[in-house]
Image (cartoon, rainbow, N blue to C red; front, side):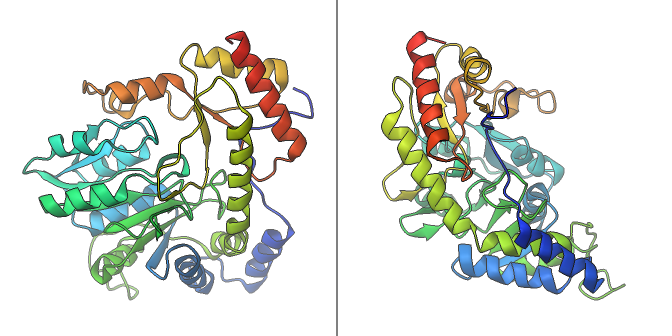
Length: 363
């Protein structure tokens, strides 16, 4: 592969992050401590309009602990999309509850509200949609449905730092919201997650659950986990948090250029009132998506990603038989192109030229 290869994603970690980590190493305070507490407060202020945040060691831990803190457990059902990363359904199953897989709409890949409504039973305790690819799901409609049926709304916001719907930030609609801080996300802490909540009791239970069930040492109030974030990871996250809004604007600018110039492919739609933060720029290729991706890589040195080729309900870990037609269409057709902030004008022009050429040739 040539040195001019354009990757689908590229984490950005610079001197400021390294200096922040070095300062923690020099301090000797490596585990959860003051850096984590500062990161939680700053994350709340920058991305959540002040809603409380609890730092954990991964986005998956955040989903799992959030559900436990909200009282989800054996015998309960939580409605989730099948078209997402496995962590969404896994986290429900890990509580002892049953994930119920619903179909999506194909404009923005969020849960289909009508299908969700048809799946609600007396066992349903919550709905956990995903703000997929950085576009907010129909949070207003799903929140109204949840309130009407007397169940909870939870947000998997792993890919949507700073996204919003009708002026309200994602992560502030549900009982809790969870953000991933994995290296390829819109911002990173190296590894980690952040859980937002406005419920003081849920927040307290989250803090207990991440720390072996204790607030005071050796006074374990419940059975918990070691899901703490370290000061090292928080130090990286605090620096990244000062940059994420600028990176988001660059992602949005890159996406606008692609949308304006790409031809003969289905480019991402943005709902009225939605702010898309473009964790991924996802097109759809109706025929031979994999051949299309291969041509971009082999002929033009351009990477891409398929998120997600196997719906969760068909994974061996779940092995379910639900009929989810839109999910199957998306899984067969989606292809995510580079949109990250490291792209320059030449890179964007190369991507447009390559995609248009491959689309015109029919892959």
